[in-house]
Image (cartoon, rainbow, N blue to C red; front, side, top):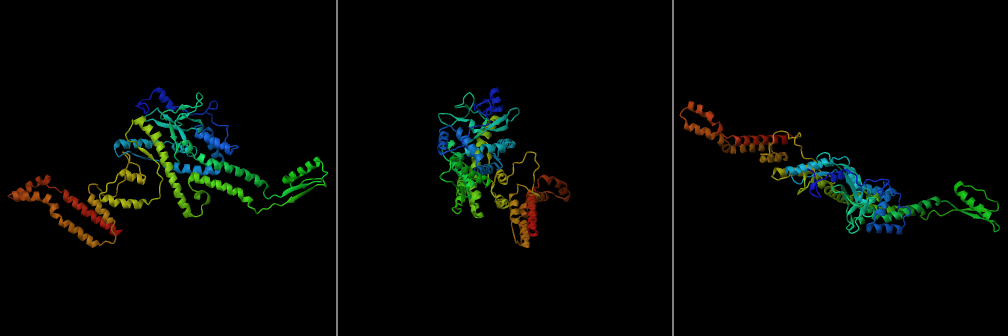
Amino acid sequence: MIINPKTNKPFSAEEKTALTEHQSKAYTTGVRTPSSSKSIATGLTPSKLASTLKNAANGSAEDYFILAEEMEERDLHYRSVLSTRKLAVTSIEPTVEAASDEAKDLELAEAVRQLLRHPQLPECMFDLLDGLGKGIGLVEILWHTETVPWLPRQFKWVDPRFIRLDKETLSEVRLVTDENQTEGEPLKPCGYLCHMPRMKSGHWLRNGLARLVAVMYMLKSYTVRDWWAFAEVFGMPIRVGKYHNNASPEDIRTLVNAIATIASDAGAAIPESMQIDMVETAKGNGGDTLFENMAEWADRQISKAVLGQTMTTDDGSSQSQAQVHNEVRKDIIKWDARQLANTLNEFLVKPFIDMNFGAQEQYPRIELNLEEAEDTKAWVEALTPLIDRGLKVQASDVRDRLGLGDPDKDAELLHPEGFFTPAAPALNHQLAMNRALRDIDTEQEINELVNSGLNDWQAVSAPMLNPVLDLVRSVNSFEEFSARLPELTNQMDSQAFIEQLTRLCWQARALGDVTDG
């Protein structure tokens, strides 16, 4: 039975239908339109930007969301560094960590792994990271409720223009509708993933990178516009037209038109009484690099805001310096990945488990761990002797470290070559120690094995020989001894002898492997 986590009761037919319907779908005839004809970036001025940011901080964020979207579309550098930060997280392969090694928790973890196999999950994660720029990333879940367990059928990105906040606390995220265009309607339970990345303390509307970058975007747009205007006339001589005092207005217009014609056609016809001079301009005052330097400076500030550094994007001068800056960027990636994993666990894993398996004390967790360069061989070689010495290590931790999943019930498993039993820790320890030896004295090792066997022969053979000796003392003839000898089968304990023989044989074999290799 599928339970509604909000009411702790089975889903009603209406609630079940709502989970399958696209609540945030846009229509050209409704208030939620697929596209917006409104532009904030066009003609952006300091006063207009200040008004937009102030209104957003007060809860009216539609213009801010439009500006943030336009910035990504119009500024190539901002789009590049923001996409780099998003893709650095979405490229991490998600893993699932069970709450414990108990059978029930392992079952729940496997169910979440099935959930992660959804083909749209990478795109869902990318859409959630839209919150890096805008402060919020909202994705609607359309559930498939025809089979058990219920699984997401589709993930739909929600345009932040459709988001409204309650007027009292500015904390509840709502969806604008034709009926309520001011405050909107509540989001359906278990139907949305809401990612609000924390990049500074305070309200999430003041956290988006677009708010931080907006000023640089505006300054850069002024710079680029002036740069193009400057480029049209840079290096061209100034054209000076001269006319006599008795020139008529018609003559003056003719001269002005001739000057304009020279700019495009490099030639013009004027009366003989007029004159046009070409005055060369100075080219060594740095005017050709001024605007470029200003635009690059703005790009560097954007890189610092988004990536936390500039070395890998703008002005890397050496591999060592870039490596240091890249480590800073890894810190940001780890923080973004941790927050995104928290969002997936809160808004996807928990509702999925609660609906299909009931509320749990502990839940499996999705992990987004950035893979670090590691010498796996060295790690295994360091861990193995510790296990042989009795260190207790959880198998799931080792699998997670090596990137291996838990084996399926009927899966074909790999085994070590030769005989191995967990019941002989001393033997395993001895084998590990032997394989770690270098430059050993083979003859001395063989003598030690022989002496070890001879020193223990009485204790090892007693459980087998004592019943035979007791029988010899109790009979009067060889015939009687031979007749009763089969009775001793159940009394003779050969386990100690077998274990000693096995240990000595494998120690000798291990010694041979080391000396041969």
